[in-house]
Length: 363
Image (cartoon, rainbow, N blue to C red; front, side, top):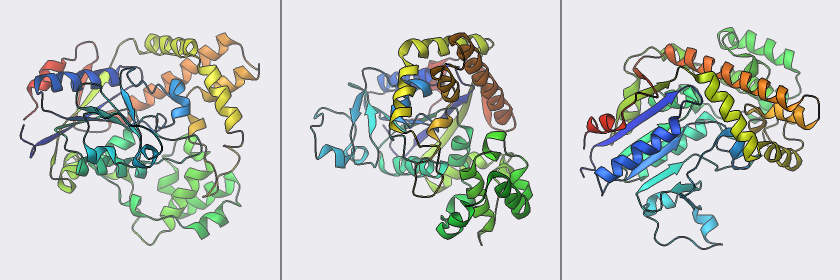
């Protein structure tokens, strides 16, 4: 295997299109074809990082995969001696999972507790560290958070803006309307394209104001979204990595797939999972200060609907309908967002050929 030529593949697309399954299928076939190969799968999902909401967020780690603890955690417990991942990978900041027999590792899934923060900056740092330190032949980034994919190929300058704790403290005293007005004055171009969730999220508004108030040039990610060369940005900063393709999965029966997935998660015990999470973190959404719990985990699709069901404000039938609708709306937003980006090869999930993809990967 020629380790001087690494490959980087993004598998994107709507929710419920089987992206994760395809990623693992690709990884396994690649390793079987190249016995000495090492594959790193990176989850690009902003909610699947929370291990206490694995069912709700669909953090589908294969049952056979082994949990690898961080170096700090390993000092207090035993560690699998026959693990085939490298020492460089094992010494990373976050826990990860690995295939029991093949050199496949999974990162970015079920790595945080509910009161830990996570952002696109954290994701970029994790991915960059993996690329620089892991002796990997193939990187597969998979997940529905489009911004994560885009930040890897075309990092925004705003990620370099450090927290302004003094400014945050002042802004935390403002109500939602005041924060929106401040951002409108500081940078109306940032407020206007925000979706309703972000516009009503004090933490997001405060960060946007913080960036706009920075002495560094404020630069919107979207302004570079149509740059045909943005897929090479990550390669320039990481010369060992050669981005190959951005594969977008679609399906004609998305509504039925989402409905069936909601039913499956209910069968798996998602209501009990959310109930336990709510008991453990009752005030998670009550404080947005810099050193207090955040509300990212509780913004996962289906969470608020399940809470309504737990409170007996809606029936199970209504829960299923509302949750399915929320997921379907999200799928449509994903499609709209990605269709504006260039360089994506869109294929129906039913017709995708993993062997054909492998045949086009340079080794």
